Every structure is written in C-alpha cells, then in structure tokens.
Amino acid sequence: MRNGFSLVLWGAAGDDLLVITPDTKDWTWVLHRTCTECGFDASSITPQQVPAMLRMNAASWRQLLDAGEDVRTRPRPDKWSPLEYACHVRDVFRLYDERLVLMLSEDGPAFPNWDQDETAVTERYAEQDPHRVAVELAEAAEALAVRFEQVREDQWQRTGTRSDGAHFTVDTFARYFIHDPVHHWHDVTPDRV
Image 1: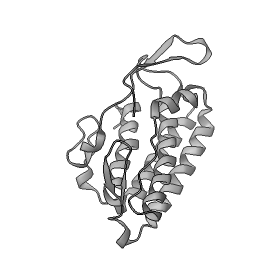
Image 2: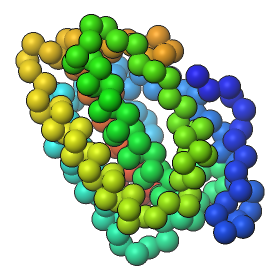
Image 3: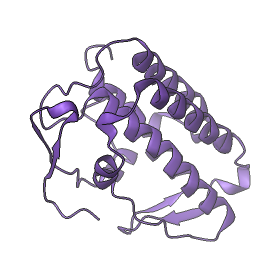
Image 4: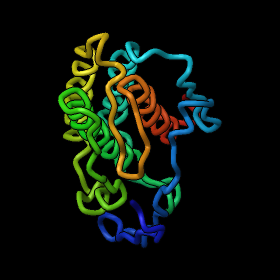
C-alpha cells in the first residue's frame, strides 16, 4: 500500500525537480460504472474480448514509442511522460500475467503487493530506452493475451485477492485490468481518443 507521500525525483539529464503524487485511488469502481476520464465501460465488454483489446493497445504504444517523437518530456511536473506511462503499462502487463497464473494455478491466492510509484523510481522509468520499452511492452502484452485466451470456461470464476482486500474473479480481473492500459493511453493521447 502507498503511504500518501509525494515522490520527489530528479529528471533525466538534470531536468527540473519532478514531483509525482502517488495514486492512492481504489480503481475497482470501474467494474460498476463508466470511467469519466477515459470513457471505459467494463460492463460493455466480455473477458474474451480482452486479448484483442490488449494487442491493439500494445500496438498503439509501440507506434508512439517508435515514432521518433519526444516521449521523455512530461506535460507537467506532476504527470508522467509518455515513456514513463509506457514503462508502467509494460510492467502492469507483466504483473497481471503473474497474477493470472496465480489465479489459475492456486485456490484463492493473495497477490503480493506492488507499489507502482516505487517501481517507477527504482526502475528509472524516465531514463529507459523507448525502443527497448516498445519491444518489451509488445512481448509482455502478447504473453498476457495468450494467457487470457487459454482460460477455460470453467476457470472464469476462479478467485484472487489484492493486498488491499479487493476480491476478483478471473472475469472481473480481466475487465478491471484492461482499463489500466486503455486509461493510460488516454493519459498520453487525450486529443487522439
């Protein structure tokens, strides 16, 4: 769980001081109502649609990261750059693949805690190579898409619990998960959505 304190980072190549306030929202509400920020409606999709949505999202990120545009610049000091969001999305794909494996192989597992803000600092998101991140993001997306495609009909109601107590079935897990990359694509391209 996050402590609610702001993370203070030095930007790459001596940029000004960068301050990111950790996201402490409980986003599970997206399973019950439309996200007013990005327009995502979890009730309008089935978990079987998630692999295709995941691949489309990953292709968009790859195109953005490989376009040669400046992806390192933050629009504001308190908002991640497109590169930082892409690193986060890549790591979310990896994390959800691990969690899906747990749900499919164990009965009612508790997911290990993950601090996304600490990971951004530790892994130095702002300094990573955009082309490498594009490749890694695409690979992680494909692995997770395949894993979701392999879920059998009798497995969609298997359960897992996040460290904060949020409880998921594989069905709700899939629909909750896909909001994250969709929302972050909106974060970096609000005029394109």
